[in-house]
Structure formats: structure tokens, C-alpha cells
Figure (cartoon, rainbow over the protein chains, first blue to last red):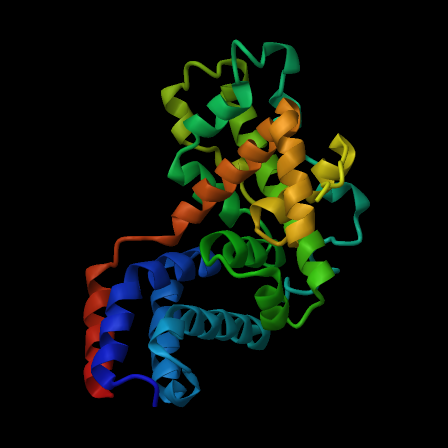
Length: 213
Length: 78
């Protein structure tokens, strides 16, 4: 055993906020997120002999969390969106939407930077809502890459897909995420008034959710 | 050693690999050199990097009290 029970407990409690945050983004549901975290901790304890060192703890327990989520998703059967065809990967036009290209104005480079202002105005809830609107197969790779900081090779291993597929899926996922953010911004006129975010921009109409696919 | 020059089209194709630190040493150096001289590609890279950073900040969340109690109880049972 690479770590004692005391170290295991300290590590779990120290990472609990992050396990909860990642589980919440994966499941999109508070109760399911708590169940996922509890199941992950229980599985991790049972698999403690597979932990190589204390330094490897964080990556190790997040791998268990990802595997538990994916396994639950597949066994549930009701939401098999990890399948690329369900995710619309056959569509060629999905990887090229860019907020930057929508907003960038090269002749204003020295005076103004609308795309950076767009980012400045994004709130945590805007990003959370946009991420939640993505189908599972896109959301999972963004979470693994951006929230968990896993390499393409680690994501490929977890999802049992080639690295090239991780790369292209991540590009499509980020494009889809930007499309949702753009739609949210358009709904509230953010791109027309980068200097003045209306109060209502923090709220998003229900109809703007879940229409990425 | 002379670094191989890349153009904007090649740079744009590698921007996500660059911010995800997935480029090899040679490609990373060529990309860094291009970004040093091309304001438009640098702005695009900065946009993608900052967006990734903002999405990444969703990783941390306050632990609900009932979850904290549940996990502490679970740990005690091991």
C-alpha cells in the first residue's frame, strides 16, 4: 500500500471541493454528483493497492472518478451520448465556430479588443450553463482537458479512443461551447455592447439550453 | 539552430495543441516564434488560452455540508 489510511483521508478531504466541482460538471446534477463522489471514494479505497505513490494521488482518484462516471453512464443505457455518432462527429461543419473570429477586428488592435472584453464579461454561471448544454461526449473531453488538466494520451486511455479522436473531438467540443456562449451573448446583446453588460445577461432564457447538437 | 518558420494557417491549426501543451519541442518553438511576430495569431491564442483558463476554474466548488458529512462517515467506516 503506497499510502496510509490517514494520508488517504487527508488527500480525499483536501480534494473534496475539486472532486465535487468536477462531478457536478460531469453529472449536471447536485444529487448525482454527491453520489458519484461517494462511489469514487469507496472505489478508491478498495483499489488503494493500485496507487503508486502519494504524489500520484490526485490523477489516480480523478481517473477513478472518470471511470466510475463513464461506467455508470454506459450501464444506464438511457444516455449513450459517448458514442461519436450520437455526438454528431460525422458532421464536418461543427469544428469551426469561433467567437474570436466573430468579434476580432484587426484594425482596432491598438484601440480596442472586443474578444477579450467578451471574455472579461463571462461569468462563472455563463460558462457553467454553456458547458452543461454540451452533449456528454463533448462535455467529458472538455472537463478532462480543462478542469482536470489531463493530457490527450490520458483522455484517450480513459475513453478507449485514439489520440487523434481526442484532438478532433476536443476541437469540436470547444467550438460547440463557443457557439453556446455566442448564442447566450446574442440573446442579451453582449456583442453589441462590449463595454456595458446588461444586468439581464447573467440570466439565460430556458430555450437557449441544450440546442447545440 | 535555425527554427523552421510557420505561417498563420499552420499556426492556427496548432493553437489548441499549443495551449494544451501537446506540441513537441520543435513544433512548440516554431509556434512560439510565430506568435512572437504575429499579433493576430497571438490574440487568437490568448483568447483560447483565457477561455480554457476560465472553463478550468469551474473545477473547484464549495463542498455541500451534507456531502462533507457523508464522506467523513464513509472514511470512518473503512
